[in-house]
Length: 128
Length: 405
Image 1 (spheres, each protein chain N blue to C red):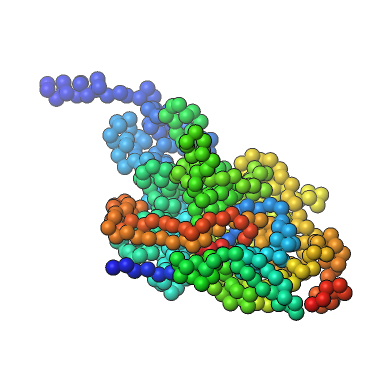
Image 2: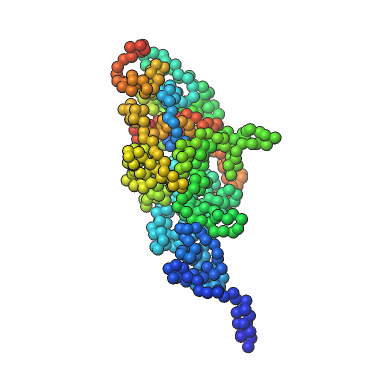
C-alpha cells in the first residue's frame, strides 16, 4: 500500500554567508525577495502590481504555484511556515515594492531624499 | 617445588617497571611505565594521569589488571561523569552537555515529527538517548533513525562505517584534534580551540551553514566540469560535489564557529531547550555595537573597545581583528528598524526547492541509533537547488531570511 503526504514548510535561518549588504533594488524590486517567487513585476498604477511567475506550477507535486513562492500579492500564504514565522502580508509587500519604484531616481541612501524621506510626502515627479 | 617453579617462570616473564612513576601531584601512575603518549598541553603527560581519563587501574603494571574497566574514549557521554566531568576536572559539564541540543537532537526530532503531522506540540520532549534505548518508531522517527541519527553526541566514535566513523564521541566530537606526528601512533590532542572542521563534520546539511561559511555550495551534483572523462568538481568526504562561492567575511578574517558561538550555546547552559533559537545567545550587535554581551547577558571576553574602536581577538589565531560598526545611515534608518542584520548582509542562501523523501519498504537500511539493519530504505530527492537571493519574511516582528525546509 502506498501512503504519502505533500506539505511544503518554510523556516527561517541565518545563512552564515555574511558580507557586503544587498543593494536596495535587490529587495525592493525583487519578487523573489518579498516571497512571490521567481518572476517579474509590473506596476499597474494606483499602488497595484502584477506578478508574472517565471516558474510553472509544480504539477508533479500537485502544487498550483512555483516552488519558490511562499505568498501571493495579497499576502495569502501558499505554504506552511515553522511556528512563529510568516511571509510578508499584502500591505508589507506593497510598501516594500512601492519603494522600489523610487529607486530608479533615488538610488540609495547617498541621495538626501532617501536619507530624509518623509513616507507620506508625495513625489512631485512620479504619478501614482 | 612445582609452585615455586611456576612462580619463577611467571617472575621471569613479568616485566617490572624500572621505578615507581608519579604524577606532578605525587600520585602514583604506573600507566606511564609502558605508555609514552602525550595528549597535549591541557592534559599534559605526567600532570593528568592516564587513568583519570581512561579509567582502569593505575597502580599496577600487570596489563590485564591495569586495563580492566578502561575506556578508549573518555569523552563518551556514557562515562563522561567519571572521566572528563569528574569532580576534580570539569564538574557539571557532562550534565550540561547531555541536556544540550547537540546531545538530545530534540529540535530535529520534534520539528520532523511536527512537520510530518505526527505530533501537535512543537515543544514536545524528545531525545536521542531515549530512542537509542527503545524501539520507538514512526515514519518520521524511522527517517530520523536512518538519515539524521549520525549527528549527535551520544553516537559512539568509530561506530559507524565510512565517513560517518569520524562523527560523534561526546566531548571529543568537538574537543579532539589529530596528534602532531601523523606517521606514528600518537595520542590525539584535546583542545578548547575547536577547529572549523570539527563543527562542519556535522553542520553541513539542512541549512548547509558549515559549507556556506567557508564559501562552498552543494550544487546540483552534476560533478562538472568533466576533465579527461572524470568528474572534476570539488568533492566533500561524503561524496557530494561542491562549487565555490564567496565565503563569509568572518571566515575570511580567520574566525571559526567558536569565535561567535559561546560555550553556553554549544555545550548547553543547563537548561533543556526544545529548539536552537531558544539556546542561541550570540547576536551580531553584541560585537558590532560593542556591547560585549550576548542576549542572555554572557560576557564576551575576547571583545575589547579601545579609543572608540572595537576589536575581537580571534580564538584560534589570537589575532586582533577590528570590528566594523553598523552603517550609521542604512542600518540605523527608521525605515529599516525591523530588519535583522542578515536580511541585508547575507546576499545568498542555499535553497533546496521541492525537497521530498521516499521510503521503500522492500529494502533494508542501517538504523544509526540501534546499529541494526531494519526494513525500509529512505531516499532523498529535490526538485532543484539554488544558491540565490534569499526570500524574506517575518519572525517575532523582525524581518528574517526564509528558506524551504
